Image (cartoon, rainbow over the protein chains, first blue to last red):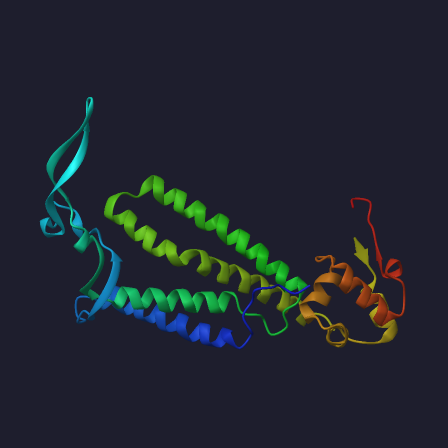
Length: 188
Length: 66
């Protein structure tokens, strides 16, 4: 039995290269962000919370909207999201976060989901068990963070959480693989 | 489930590596089976029995707890 839906073994190397670039770039930004120039580019976005009126009144406009009252509806002139700004728009954005996320996700997926050199049913079993294991650990950590971490700090938890599932999987899968490879060294 | 792959291998005088190559699996798999840490699929069990020229039941057998 072979695991289906896996990439060829050769993709693993590309994955590692991307993953390492992503991790090094992340660490560089974490430690030297104040010294590096921000990478800005005009990019399209399909949704923007730009429109929160307190933060940016520009994203809102006064418009006539229907409001429910007792016995029917009435027209009210109200501050509502300006659709032109709210949805699809081109704007100058800092894109290093975007690029790092893309590189990390593609890298981690390629490393995790490429076949081993000798992919067989035993390795498929380790793979699936590790994925289950990583899911448990990841959500335990997330539950813990939901309970004990608040506000802006929590949004960082969510940022890290985009990658932790795959990282935990990789650590556990490779550890078990290493252990079973080492076990064969004692045998003939 | 237990098995006597190791014994059969000794009779044929082949290494884990050679057996792995014959049936197209990794060496880890053979080792894990010999250590009773992994129960192979029916396909793999039949392939192993084939290599040793025996019936599956002669190589794999149930334990009380199964």
